[in-house]
Image 1 (spheres, rainbow, N blue to C red):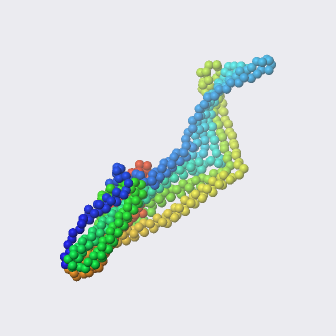
Image 2: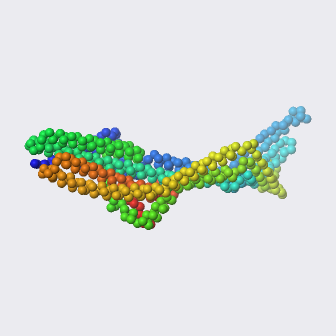
Image 3: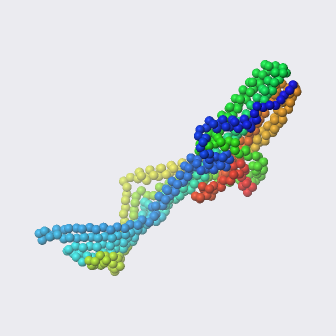
Length: 526
């Protein structure tokens, strides 16, 4: 019995043709490509153009605006103005004469609200009067005053007055932490989708190899049938085998297309930009390069896991959101429904006379011998307290909701790291087993081919062994994918994917290193 090996085409050439056929169904391939195929570039493109990251960045900007708006209540307010009034008064005794009068006022002032709620308002004004009866000398009256308004009930105390600023600052900090977490989520989604593409690409390659083997068996079977070494009826079995492998190859190509769609969505990139980069994809991370030995240090691992919860950006964002909600709720509770303001004013008047306009401002430099002092107490009592009570209910509910969210997040976060550690250990064990199965089954298939050539085994034995080889090769690819995904998820769940400092510039840069996506964190040593 003769058994020759004459495949019609190499597997690598067939794979290239299949990938080419896959990319041809994608539109607009003439566009300039922005993705060269590496994992790091996929992540970088995600960070620059993914929609949820852009939303998180805009939320930070919005919260910065809210903080500025809240601080505006304590900005100094400068005022200045000038007014002129002319009056004409009839004189009855004269039978038609009138008195012409005029008033010219210059004024300037500053209003400054303090954190305690006290409002300081220094003012300066000059009033020039002229009429034909009593003020024919055109006197100018200058006034310098310091006015102070002290709220004794509503709007009193820094806890109430500065609550909007404090809450806005905490909300901004919370949005920064949320932005870090959103970036991490987007990175993990892209990395997982990337490894799905790599796995689908390798699965397609395995399917092509299996199809090539089926074609090889059919070619040799036809030669054997022509030489009457096997029944011609057996050729049908070889034909069915080849058709089955062809169907598996088409299914693998479809899976690759679906994986590309998922990666396109994760990166927020057009799908046509991904197809041409399929032949430049990164290889799966190797277990020997992933620093798995760090898992053998129980003490270091326990320390690392115990601190992972506190490092989580989503947990820190929830804590800041709770602090902001409690700040507003406390301020609403402390604030009064009625208003009692004590106003105090101290200053002086000056006076000059003369028709020249230049004499007007000299009134400010000629103070009277005594000071002007004024005290006023104003009390306002609303007919109902609905507005205040409604605000208290709203803010208390917001604070309770923030506490509920934080408690739920803490409960989940405490187990996420440990759960992911077990997933990682299982993925490592699965990869080791799959590697062994693939290696042994490759040897078994080669032995079975020789046995079949020598007539020592049946065609069914050969088909079964070849099917097992394909299955083990595919299982090995899936195990590599699971291991690669488990690595990045462990990084994410232990808040070690990247940990930028809290600051505008550091947030955008991010401390994401290439090996952060494919290795265990070195912090396990610490």
